[in-house]
Image (cartoon, rainbow, N blue to C red; front, side):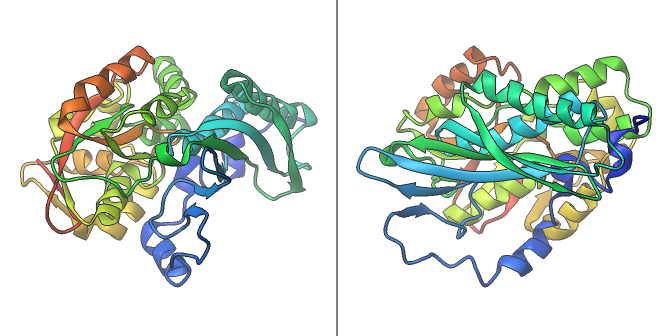
Length: 346
């Protein structure tokens, strides 16, 4: 069977496949009430990264699932990115992964067995780096290629980090540079240089393991990861959960170096328009911001960085933890403030 490009088999790619925030809110609007289970520590009510269920005074189980269509054409790289992205939701709760299951949907009449096997091998490789077994899964014959994981983790109930615990005066720290969606769009258009592809793979396959360590710090008040809704979308979820606003300094936001010139040329995924249409009315942009800058803040990140709301007195320690863990671009990008759940970008 002659091989075809993975991205040509799907109408979307990576976390850009997510349903738009506004439509998702309409779909889930009546099912996001807190469920009457005392041991369910986190459900769907604050749009957090995973569900969490208390087993006993020392242990809580984290359960999440994430899957999408190809963001790159190389099968092995696609598998690695999808697995890294799925495990990120466990780290974003302050947890440690213990096991994963594969979610596999493949057009078996269009992709060779070797290509499908390479996708699965990519997922297995990331699970090996994370030190967990890929213990099974489920597969279907699908019209578009889909791959991801069910990720299971564990956390001490007292160290659980939600996306809703931010406090006024907290510093906001972002762990990875923005621009994955820009790089992916440039790749699809055939204009991404080799250095850009290498940067895309490097950032999208970097496990957010530092989240497990952050769980041990009392000054870490809220934690999430930046994925398909972009930095602004996931920060707004944090604001709504805490009932307060945030301010971001654009000059402080880390950007992937290879993505910057491409963003200035107008490259960005279609998810940007859906994102801004969904929540743009909740963002106050400085008048001097250019359109490409606004779009980059809403860029759909696939396997993006952790976003942390921390007490000022531990901000330097948290930043140092990111840097020691290999997240060289991690930076303080703003702070949380009392007020309506909005984001101001200066």
